[in-house]
Image (cartoon, rainbow, N blue to C red):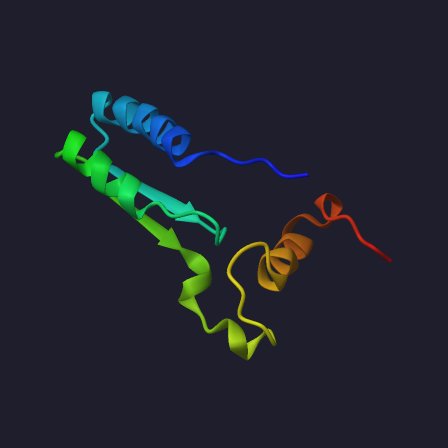
Length: 98
């Protein structure tokens, strides 16, 4: 089982967040992404045009290190790295086949 958000839904959620931040005088947003299946670049571009005073950036943290040093297969979406990270952070959420 998995849950999917379409890019249009992601954009709607982010637009709501940016609208609230903008109205409160907060003009910076960092989207911290740790899942390889997401692509926020086109969403950030679109929001940047709609909210020119807002600085919006995103970080895909798995790119910050070379996964090949730690894992045999690089992967990018629900891979060994993401599962290992979740085992470390929240092991009760991971179902084991053992």
